[in-house]
Length: 562
Image (cartoon, rainbow, N blue to C red):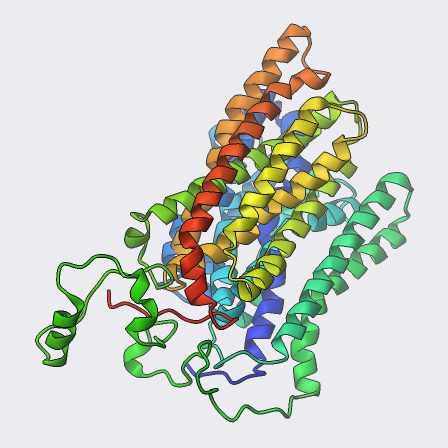
């Protein structure tokens, strides 16, 4: 693999292509758009539809297989699997909703949705792992950008559904079955691993700022056009024009490699800076092709993080010098862990539980937002859903920007922001429970931001604590907190409370603050526990961040022989 110098275009072309794939990977967010058609056309009960919704969450978040595969196969293979899953899964659902095939068994449709949304895990893993490795010194920023576009994908598909497909569920499913594979096949070639350049390019920060600004403008545009579509009667030509402008916004990250082509930088770095701790090696020997990053410093830099060893370090070094033994030790936080090595660490499970509590409580509101709005007197919940989507995007993007700034300037661990946002979530759930007039939209916006931060922080934190070499499987295991949280807090808790209150009102629907009040109070307690655990985790890993970011930018920890 050739080493890319500063200003090389392939990583930026790959990032621009990844934006499209990440939007496609957000296809699981389209479930609310066609769920009513599943219920009416196929005659499902509400309970059957809820179980179908669980299939949607399971497929989207169970990514252990792509996590393993991303270390064994190139990105295009992972994307190709996602293409096939999307085509066959959504294809079966389209055949059922369009009534091309009649009387498909319920279990076939359930399995088809698991397969369809599991394409998200394969596509997301391929682009996220590849780009995190291509930009290892800016992993927080990259994670924020890519997960931000996933957060916007629901709004993108809603725009297509309303502006182009005339709110037709069958046409949407056909678009998902054919459009997602076409997008991924078109971008597949550009998403590839590139050996990072040595050091940080001075223009890289500006490029990231441009990409973040472009995504923010897209988010504002999508929110504005959604409100316009719901308040005005737009003609078909205007709708198509608005959708076309959205496509232009999605293409905007390509301006970076285009600018590099038309206006190549004349600045050349003379070599590595003396004493710089954030430079990667410029040469990759054949014996190191399996390692993503090359070790950089002596063992003294990590001495304070060494775990107890049976043999004294002096004796071990002497034996190594004489060739008697080959050094072999367990990895330390900040180095590359195998999954089986990471899973026995306390910090691994602390991060998992904190993420599970934050995301699980947030997804409970997301899955029930339409019912919450109706219960509190909001008949048209479209704007409420768009507000959550927009705020979710801001949280994901902002988590990368803010955590990256403070981790470089103050060596504050990223998990500090999980603690802060989960404290805010306590207040948000209490606002929901109070049902005070005028607080619904404010609470939804706050919750959306805090929900997005959990994603934007967990991803780079996992890569910094346990390395990028096996990041795919570690990250996807962390994501299991999402469907488990949805099952426990949404499927069991919120569903039970809602049905109980609806039974008291002797009707199929529940109206009033009591429908979800107990759920919100329990979720506030859940977030209080999550904030406490995130505080413990932040204190535990602060020394790791002081080592990794001691020079004001990321330094690559010593790779262990394991």
